[in-house]
Amino acid sequence: MGSIIEIDKRISLIDGNDLQRKLRTGTYVIKEEEITIVETSASPSIPYVLEGLSEAGIQLEDIKYIILTHIHLDHAGGAGLLLQKCPNAKVIVHKKGARHLEDPTRLIAGAKAVYGDDFDRLFDPILPIPSERIIIKEDREILAISDTCTLTFYDTPGHANHHLSIHDDVSNGMFSGDTVGIYYRELDQDNIEFYLPSTSPNQFNPEAMLASADLYESLGIDRVYFGHFGASHNPHQVYQQLKYWLPIFVETAKNAHACNPTFEEKLSALSSDLYKTVREYLAQKGVPDNHPVYEILALDLRVCAMGLIDYLMKQE
Image 1 (spheres, one colour):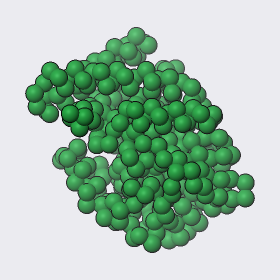
Image 2: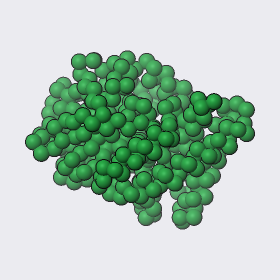
Image 3: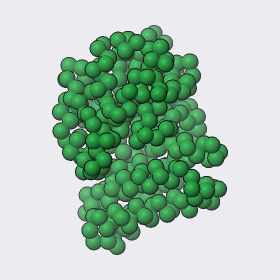
Image 4: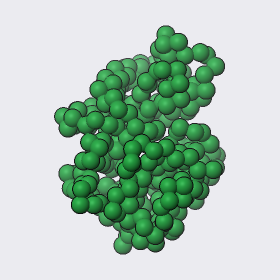
């Protein structure tokens, strides 16, 4: 069941089969003196994570840290469940996310508002995490996980206000969560390197997202470790595509927002417009109409549309 990808001798990526899709959401394993996990995905992914850890020869009692870039359920929903299996681990999170791990009531309500009847299938169960097993990291704080490896935490809003990015000094790579978007690995087989911003509700802010991308660029990193999905060795292309698509997303949203009276009508129009724009772009790159990537793009762009409309309504 497990599927583990060796990025290098230190870092592996477990495919969590999120949404029953391969190459969608990953859990990173940093094999240093203090074994460290980055992201857990949602609870239905935990059996895949456990299988991947077993494949990697990692004992659950040896895991020291479980780092969450942010508390959206596709990245952190399985943290409570995984923590039950890892008796010596603690969870590291942004200060604005900690209370929602202790009491996930609002997290659950927010996800149900977005995913409706699909919530249980996608996310259940979401278990609370005891406060004594939570570590809060502030902007630019560090964590040594061996004599030769230090992780540095950066406060990187834009996708969410409770978002951390984590720099690994050995690989000069950044664990990005959703800060600089999604990497659509399904298009790699077509020799197309494709990234889109993730503008999901309800804390999306385009200016903050661009500022966070500028931070990455200023640090001169060599890799971006995406939550969705995998390592990019081409950060310049990541930034370029984010800066290309983000203004298109916002301008398209402004038009849909102005032309439609209700939230549902705005959402429907914007989802359709974004999907059409992205399809046309990919068609020009030679992606066929029946490519499986379009299924996940339809879902992602609808969630992006929710965040964009929410952002514009808050601006009024």
